[in-house]
Length: 59
Image (cartoon, rainbow, N blue to C red; front, side, top):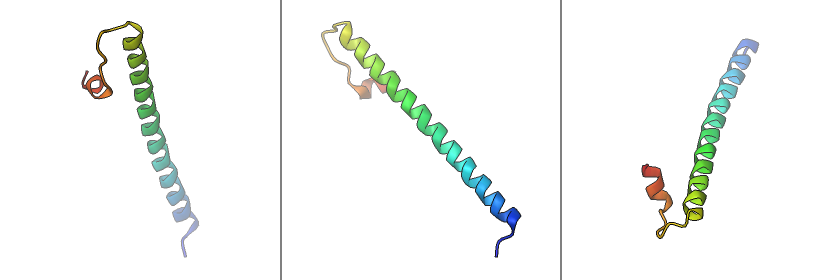
């Protein structure tokens, strides 16, 4: 049977892992949002060609 301190440590580790995952998701969401804004800017400036997302990631 686990002791109370072991259970608390497990909970803290789980919450820390969850925090890291949420931070990564947040960063990726912000990156995707900036890509969409960049794509909209390209389209609005009426370029003769369209740069696809793969090329934008290379910048």
